[in-house]
Image 1 (cartoon, rainbow, N blue to C red):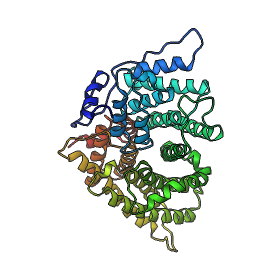
Image 2 (image 1 turned 30 degrees about the horizontal axis):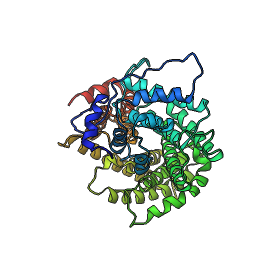
Image 3 (image 1 turned 180 degrees about the vertical axis):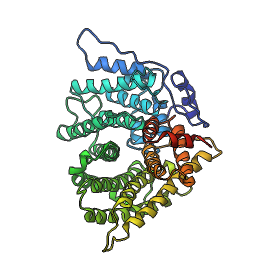
Image 4 (image 1 turned 120 degrees about the horizontal axis):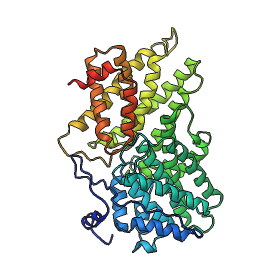
Amino acid sequence: MQHSEKAMRQGASRLWTLQTVGSSDPTPSSSLKPKVSLRSGPFTLEHLKDALIQELAPVTPEFVLLSYRLGIDPWFPILSISRLQSRLPPTWDEAPLDFALLCLCILLITAKPPSSSEDGSDTSDSKSMYLLVKSSLALTEGLGVNSFLIVQSRILVTLFEVGHGFYPAAYISIGTIIRAADALEIRPWADASPSASPTEEEKREETTLIWCGILILDRYIAIESGSQPPITSSRSLSIQDFLKPALCPTHNPDQDRTGSICRLSRLIEASSLLEKIHITLNTSPVEHEPNIAELILTVQTLVVLQGILNQEVGDGIYLFAGGLNLCNIALLLAFEHGSKVPPLTSGATANCTSIADTSLNSVLNTVTSVVEIFMLDTRPIPFSPIPPFVAFLVFKAAAIVTQRLLLDIDSSEDLKRLRILRNFLGVAGKRWLSCERYLKLLNEDTTPRLLKVLEQE
């Protein structure tokens, strides 16, 4: 890097302000509204690049790299930092279009979130930048341009939509990403992509990171969006075969787990099991016995993976471990289902309802304890390393506890749990607006009487 991290932080103050929520951890916020105008003449790639550079001008390329390292890479490392660093241009004027677009997407997702708006009339700088980025992606598509960097930009935008609860946008976007990635395979670097063509080794690395990101996002969005399976489920075997040469070495216990692909591999494993739980729960709803057998097998695998991830987190903060978040979501879904299945009179699964109920309590205790420790920690709370997947995990736990309280409002233990979970969603909403969305959903399913009890300390 040409400048120290301290210098980059200081220089960035021209555009970004630091969001401090009991923390010195930087979360940038745009103070410059995108200026987009319709041109009367032919619209070209140069026009689009000029518009993007106008938005990037107040910050340096080095600051964008720092923003990615601090705000995205710790929990979703779909970009190689070394490759990103090697692409940094001396000035924005020398940046290719797709690199400029990727940088704007990095700033978008690491920015202070837009203010929530019931009527969709939010005019915050972040929301305006989001709409500019979405428009720019549509323009590159219309102008016949596609590249690895543009597909990665699409992934980051969809991640932004997931984190801030932009639905159905996220559900629609994931399908577009898959087609854009497919297009790279069919016609690599179609119509003279703005960036120089990579080597075969670089193509393989970029493609691996892209499909890892797609699989993880697709599986998470499917869970959040309903009963339909992930879009990639019908081709998951062929995608996994492609990823095996890169992912299999990461299972070696001596492997350095700090690399992007190693860390993504754990998210892939957890998301794969989450997908199996989701598909099992949403197929053959009448035939409980096959479902339970499949669930038991998947849950056993989840528990093993969870143990491995716990060891790898070590003294770290469990809330920041994306793989553990996905594992606990899967376990909550499985045990919630198992606790509601009518008791069977014979067979190895005869006591599954009782076991599932006990296990569900254990997961709820774990999630609540992790959240409580995070909230009670006397140190400043860093919000940027929190994966957006945490929002649905805490929401799902709170929804289960809410349903229990509707049946037994006098349960002091469940009331305590629910207060902790809801308080976390309220605080974490300063980083991911999906938390606010989930709180509204919880309120819709909560009686006025229970809400009143929750407000009492």
